[in-house]
Length: 540
Image 1: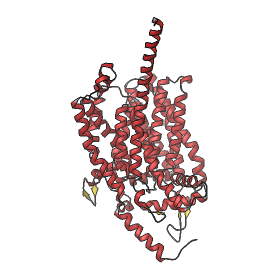
Image 2 (image 1 turned 180 degrees about the vertical axis):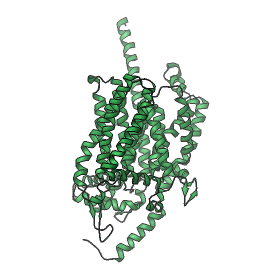
Image 3 (image 1 turned 135 degrees about the vertical axis):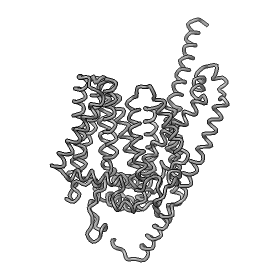
Image 4 (image 1 turned 90 degrees about the vertical axis):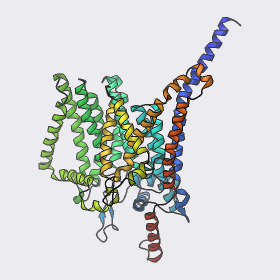
C-alpha cells in the first residue's frame, strides 16, 4: 500500500474518532436530560392511576375545580374567559380579575385533544396533563440555566432533583389544574432568555452587526414577561427580581469600572415588548372601577408597573454612561436609583395614589398582615405550622435536598471568592436571596424556591463528586490509554453510591406523594358528590 493510501487511512480513522467523540459529547448530556425528564414525567403522571374513575377525573386540588369552570367557559368561547361570575359572591356576582393564561392553555389543549369537539372526559384529561408537561419543561429550563451559570454536570444533577424532589413536583402533578406550574415555567423562561440577552449584548461590545442574538433573546424575554403577567397576579414579584439584579449589576460594573449600557439595552427591550403586549389587552379588559388599579387583578396597575420599568432602564442606562465617563464611585448608581424611586413614589402619591395603595397591599399580602391571609395555610411562614415552629413542611417537601442546598450555596459562595462574577452568576445570587426570603415568608412560594434548592443541592452533589475525582475520571476517559480500562476509582464509586442512597428517600417521598390522594381532596370530592346527587341542577 502506498504512503498516500496509508496516510488517508490514518486520516479517515482519526477523523472518524473525532466525529464519534464529538457525537458522544453532544448526545450523552442530551440523552441523560431526556431520561431525567422521562422520570419526572412518570412521577408526575402517577395520579392518573387512581384519579380517572367511572369516566370522570377526580381532581386532587380544590382550586382545580374553579380552573376547570374557567377552562370550560374558555373552550366554548375561545380564546375569551369569563370576566364576571354570577356564582361567586352570590347573588351579587364577582368580577374575575385573575390572569387567564393558564385557563386559555388548558382550553386550547382540550380543543386540540378533542379535535374541536371534545367531550367532558377529554377536556378534564387534557387539562390535567398540562401541569405535568409544564413541570417537565421546567426541568429542562433549570438544566439550561444551570449549564449557563455553572457547568453541564451540575446542570444535570439540578435537573435530576427537579424531577424527583417533592417540592418541585407537588404543583405539577396530574389533575393539579392550577396556575402554579405555569408560574415556574414562565418565570424560568423569562430568566433564561433575559440572561442570554444580557450576556450576548455584553459580548457583542454593542456592535450593531453583533447585537442581533441579544435583541432576539430580549424580545423573546419580553414575550415571556407578558406571559408572566397573564399567569399570576403576583407577577410583579418575579419581574422585580430582574430589576433587583439590574441594580446589583450596575453597582458591580461600576466597582470594576466597566460600562453597563448593554444591561439597559436588554432591559428596555424586554420591558417595552412586555408593555406592548400587556397594555392593549389589560386596558380593554379592565371594566370594574373597583379593581382599576388593583395589584391582585389584571388592571392598570400592571401597565403602569411595566411602564415604570421601561423608564427605569432608560434612565439608568443614560446615567450609567455618564457615571462611567465621570469615573464615579460604585455606590453612586444605587444612591441615584434610591433617589429616583423616592421621587417617583412622591409623584405617584400625588398623581395616582391608587397605584401606591396597590403596592402597599401587595407588600401586606407578602407579610401576611391582611386578615384573610391568617386563614390560608399556604400563606403561613415556611417553618410555622399552627403557630408553632416546625421542620415538618420543609422536610416533607425538600427532604435531604434542603440541607444539601444550604451546603451547596455556601460552597458556591466560596467558589466565587476572589473571582470576577459573570452576569449569570450575580443574577443567580440575587434571585436566590429573594426566593429564600419569599419562601421563608410564605409556604405558597415553596414550588418556586424548589428550583433554587435543586440548583444548589445539585451543586453540592457535584462538588462532592468533584472532590472524589469526577473531573479527573472524565479527563482520563478522553485519553486512549484510559479508555481501554475505563475503571472508576473506588473513591468516586463510593461517592456515587452514597449519593444514590441519599437520593432514594427523596424519590420515594415523591412517589408516595404522587401515588396517594391528600385527605382534604377526598373529603372535598365526597362532599361535591353528595351535592351532585342530592340537589337539583342549576343549569343545563
